[in-house]
Length: 582
Image 1 (spheres, rainbow, N blue to C red):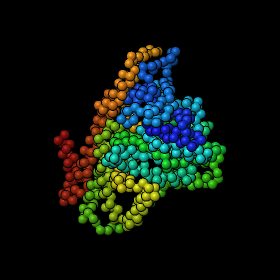
Image 2: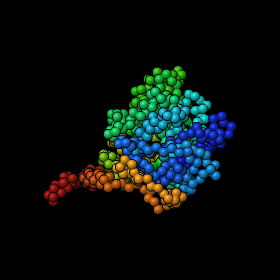
Image 3: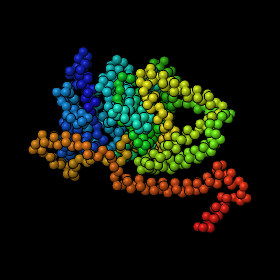
Image 4: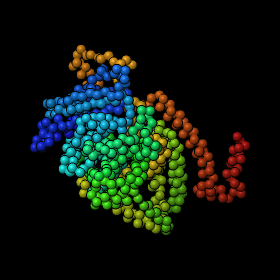
């Protein structure tokens, strides 16, 4: 909220602008949609209370016998709560900010919140530009203005996005976490190479929902209806089939695509480098797997959707040259060819004769880990098997390093080295001309080490859970939150404070209390369910690998030389002896 308010202040500082200036705040409405009364955190309500945008104790469960769907609070505030929970007002050049706070009665997920935003409030306000901003994403002070300026200059822009950066924390201390560092490298390379190149074609495959902008006019009559199609109905069931349900996990990709192919219109999508925002990314393996499950499955199924529907671009009003460019972009995005050499030409062995044993051991460990991941992916939540997933990452990375032995035996090794080297030289060169090369030095190693885990763990878990069409939102994998005052009566008692200043000070004291528990805990039902599933997983793993260990001992090349001189089959003897003892 403080970042948003600073953006409003910057817009109001544009004195020479015909659109903005001192009274520019009157043309901006900040809409906050909270997804569920029993999900919102009490500290969030405290911050909004300090700003005057929420009042505790007046919420009603029903009105005239009908259940309440959402609770609306509207206020023009001139207060801002900073990171230290100090309240700042007009004395700090805080402009008035028009705020609408919509607190939904039930938790109905993200698309339902967007339905409220676009179908209810935007339908009444009729805005020219809509900026979507996720909680946890902080735009820089000038970002909102930069995005608006792009739309103002080019009336054909239907959607745009800025650069989303990973929140690196105080003095970049978050980079000490390899998972965050690797994600930082991903985000940077995407912003340096992918988004700018796609912007040239006028079609960005995904305008990330965390920080994107749309011309409201462009969303109407088609794209918005397609975008909201994946929402759940009142019974909790999806309105679509399983294929479409997975496809709509990447709803921002659907909206981007539908804007470009909109019939008889020529909207284009743009990347605005100067509009930057920081976002908090998953900092632990379970949260990361949950997030990427949605991303991977969503992007996989939307790829088929875009291929099937891409001929619709010829029905749009796009110029002929852009239709040709979009077809070229489709071919580039849809088909990736993997060339693998099978030529073998041994060269000097760097492992001094032990390379085969090392590779065999690594391969066996790799296969074991793959089986573990498959079993854990069938019905377990990552949060319930956190230790297993976390311990699976290093062995997979070790297997990737052990492949050096096989690669060194390949005659095409030098060609592979050249290709890989050129790829990273391209990354480095592009980063320098982008004037942001630091991720190449601070995050590349972590990214390379975690890439094998990305391929194995994330893809396996995603495809083993295509039945799961939940959002996997960071921190929203368990049912937590503080339930505000709620009773069964039609109206509830309103708490009246005799000393309003004392109540206000009490809220500030609560916010500044460092003793509060920010961690989310599983409730008893979910915890018990996770325990049962973990027990099942451990039992199956024990059964598989006790048998696998016996097979490995008697069939592996590493141990075969010890049994080659025997005149009997040691495996059969062991098996018969074990049966007799049983």
